[in-house]
Length: 235
Ligand code: ADP
Ligand code: MG
Image 1: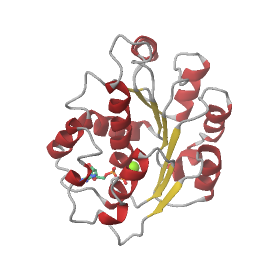
Image 2 (image 1 turned 90 degrees about the vertical axis):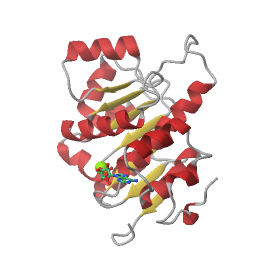
Image 3 (image 1 turned 90 degrees about the horizontal axis):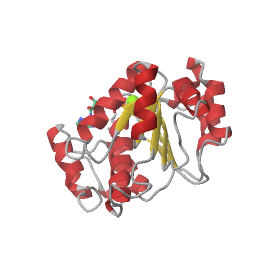
Image 4 (image 1 turned 45 degrees about the vertical axis):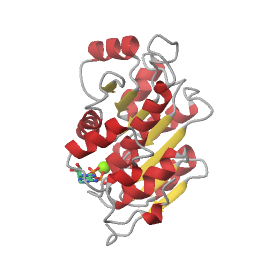
């Protein structure tokens, strides 16, 4: 394991080469991500151990990749011991909740970049956008590995059984400080309490600020989390 404190601002992603699939490292190089940002350096080793994470770091500090990289790594690892014909190979393993459709596009773009060299292995669906017929087909037929959604869309899809999260491994709430204020409060609660989720999964709560809403979500989503609070001037 890489100790977070050993990863300083001069370390490149190669310090994680024993933790990350070579296809991820290649895509990071293509993306021009030479070095992990501080939140990425701190979150990655902890995330890959399977712990829940609450990360507070300023806007622009690289929080998207801080959760997308470990999620892609976990899925590649899980699939490496299965063959494509195995039951359980193609299931939804990760859901990423975001407050707005605009943000869903940004997260989808980050994921597609990370998946440049493994796009056949990992299917991503942005359910916050697109027509519902198309979406229904994509979700029911493909059982995408990663689903990005707003809470209201996700809840609707769960209620209609279009989305099945019974094999979920990773749950992300991005922009946790904003998501409840967009009127998603009740939807988020119902996603957690409606019996849609398995007993065990890893959660990530990402936020630019610590607010009462983040505390509420922490109680709802996290179990013994590692709490990463990065100061403004650290990164
Ligand atoms: P946040 O969610 O913390 O506001 P983002 O994940 O949106 O930040 O990242 C902000 C910008 O930094 C994006 O343009 C992203 O592509 C870029 N970025 C993220 N990580 C790195 C990195 N390790 N090296 C270079 N650029 C990065
Ligand atoms: Mg962000």
